[in-house]
Image (tube, rainbow, N blue to C red; front, side, top):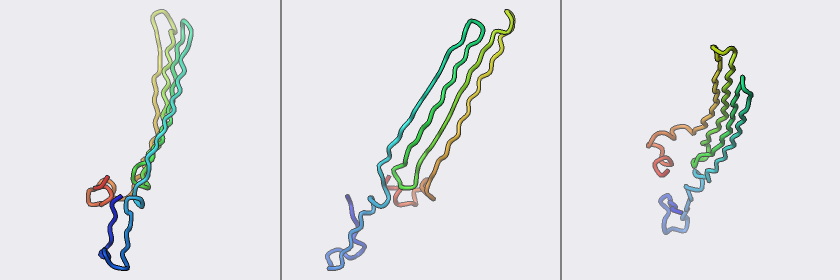
Length: 110
């Protein structure tokens, strides 16, 4: 790990700070998916859902998302088929201030 001595290198007061350990973290992620499908000769359906959670490599960054989808089809008459397809999603993107800018030293390293 690269350290910086803040101008005290080689002196009795040498201070080495491991900046990377203060700014970075492991970035695990997990995703869970579920889908169901079924129906009969007149009506069919498909439903799915997803949960996604990921930490960023910079401490304080994370992404959480939950989404779902439903498709429903029904043969009302020989000449009429009706259906609905709908998807919903909610995302929460937690970001530290300035992490998209290269004036942030930690982002430049990342």
